[in-house]
Picture 1: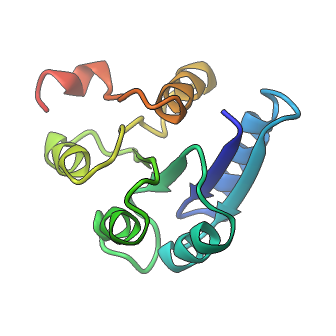
Picture 2: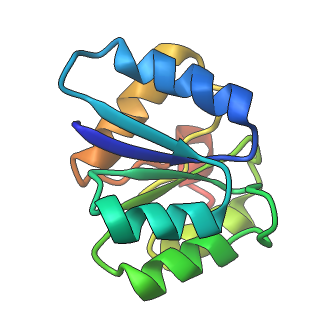
Length: 134
């Protein structure tokens, strides 16, 4: 995992995630943005990234619309949704819409890092308690 574009709903939690991920090593480049518009702009200037962890509740965009916009403009970009929601319907819609995974933000540091590593490597991640329902 080298290049991540964190697109989230809360700058403080995105900064915390960026700090957590930076502890993995010096070869990681992390960019954090707070809207889908900023995400698209960053992808246009600095993309592609190994992974775009995209918050399901990102401001000024309705739920999965951010994923749709990224997939339309940058179809080869790997996007993983981040959310605290455990409802299987948006999870299934996200996976069907091209997301590579749906790790829960509430997970502790090690499982979340594992999920992000998996997705950055191109492997799908769905929480075990949701996998059977999706």
